[in-house]
Each structure stands twice: as C-alpha cells, then as structure tokens.
Length: 131
Image (cartoon, rainbow, N blue to C red; front, side, top):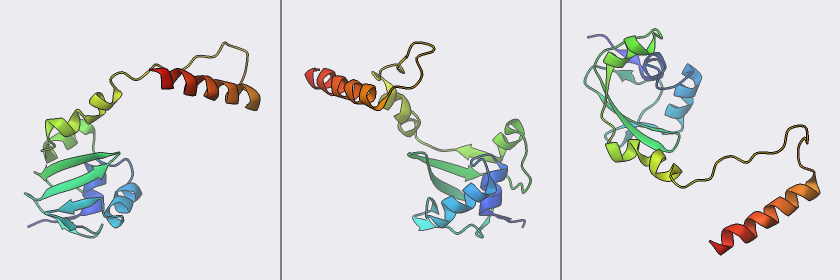
C-alpha cells in the first residue's frame, strides 16, 4: 500500500499553493481527521477524510488517489472528493451580499492625504450609523 506525506499531497492536489503553506497549516492545527490534528509528516492513504481550515472555510476532502508530484487542476480533481457541505461553500456569497462596491477616486488625484482620509472616515461613520 502506497502512502504519501500529508503536506506533499495537499500541495500536489492544489489545495494549497505551496508545500510550505500546506506544512504551515498542518503545524498550526488546521488540518485534521476525526478531530485528531495531523502533522505534515502524517502518511495519507486512500479513503482518508481530511478536514482543512483555509481562509475562514471548513473544507472536507476524501482521498481517492495518491500523488506526490504537483499536476494540473484537471488531473488533480479525480484524486479527491470534495465533501464540504453546501452551506459552507456558500458562506462567502452570504457574507458578500449587500456589500458596497469598491470606492473610486478621480484619476490623477493620487492617494488621500492624512487630513482627507480622516474626513472620509468621519463621513463614513456618520453615513453608516444612520442606516
């Protein structure tokens, strides 16, 4: 039975952008299985269910295949099943609804000065308190 290091597998199936970020997540306790926190050196096997906390989301993956080299997203997709609940996946959309668009400053005016920034913040406090 083949086994692969956890940090290497998380990186190779593109759950984390770099292997060091995958390793850091494991060390900080953000990767677990059955409420047991896993180290980066944990050997993943087929059928394992991993809970990953990433970017404010609680993601759940089931390992279908083991790979140790980073591959394209299309080749990585069959290596795991995403068991994350729909409510968790829609958490960002629920949070984002009703948020204002980014602010626009006229071209060529540069960054606001300290005085302008303070007046903008004061205006926002007054405006958003009334709603």
